[in-house]
Length: 118
Image (tube, rainbow, N blue to C red):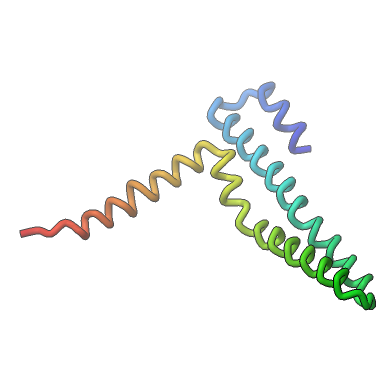
């Protein structure tokens, strides 16, 4: 439905800036859904395999399963940080706000504190 709405935004009488922001938001949401599904799916699969093969007595096989589980857990936790990077890559407005906050606010404040006044 979001994809359909994004494709048909140009047919509505909406201001150009609003239309562009709606498209950016739709792309951000779709990319976020894709990243989350790719990050959570391996975790679920390895969890199920680990539980199903818990009674196996082969230590090499158990080590492989534990390694796969640890790797899947890392991707799962990476999904918590992915919205920030997704928004940086997709949204021009978010990048502008980030540059403003980092460079205009924080770095200027830092350099003002370092300047010694006589």
